[in-house]
Image (cartoon, rainbow, N blue to C red; front, top):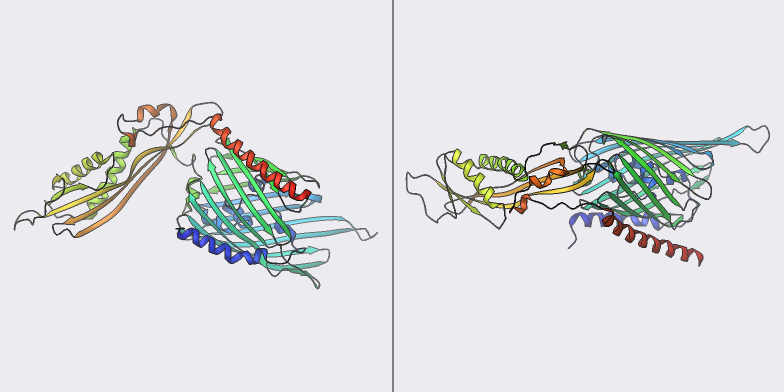
Length: 506
């Protein structure tokens, strides 16, 4: 049965499809709204509806605002065709516990010599200002909307209009997401008495992260252009460098082509990106500078994006089981403190379900309860009432939801060099306290997690033989394991290309 989050996303798409595709095809005005901004998105062929974040979210999918985790800004310069230049600036910041607010400005202009002698030059320009708000309805579902004021000038004439965008991003898992957005809904602008509809755009797509690769696929329908397929890939050969490529297929546009670019970052905060896209009319260039500061609430994707940066790097790490014991100590301390057991009570401990680390949980429980002056016994509590004057009797049942160490990611800072590993330790215990009448008097689920970077060369000494929950395997990266998805992606991409080539020739 579909999840509630997926159902909401589907309803949103069904609600906005008529606005995006049921309009008659024609020549739209304000065509500059279809010029993608952001060097990273454009280097990936514009496949960005599921990856939108930060300030550029207002250009691709406003739901990306739900992924904002701090103050972010972005500046982009676009060197477009026919000596047209565009500049884009955006800022986004968390707003409330589950939302984020963003603003964006874009301006472009060009000029050319007038054909009429003595008339000088002819000038044209475009501008828009946008504001948007995104909110997480669930930890893995973000919805958003934005409002844009659009103004265009052509010689002495000008037109103004308002547009409205909506979008959603649904995180299926830590490395997979789906998204949909409708952009440029509105009444259109007019020069004198000539009115043009806006380029209403419906975009749907997904993204998948595999090791150091990120794949994105979008399907885009503009009201006056045939369906466009956008595909992009991003690869991090080292921590500070990203290589990107993409393809745009299927639209009736001179810009149908391929794209590529790269990006560098400093301290996972400052990003400088470049994109180039060739076409039959010439090449386009984009250069973008962006940054993010501070932390805040975000969608699951916001946490997943920080796979290697922003974590403490431990040169001499503790063993896996030592870290799990520390987290378990915090969990049990919180649980026992919340139970408010009468002094001197007899406490029986019983396990629910099976887990290899139950002996560790039981030992910490016994230690904590004994230190508080309770008499502790393992096994279920007998169905007897304590005699008058005897200590009260209680039973603590616990179920281990999670209690293990995993190695989330293995990488090298550079092409050669020592490996680094992100170690993730999770403890999640469900507790239930009952009295002698078997009535549940207290219950709670308490969690702790620790993420840190450790040297890859010390992994073996951190494991505990015979305890698999504290001895996770390490999956080595290698070119042989990278080739398989590349081959599959090449085959799929080739089939898509042949399909569209065959259709156009017919």
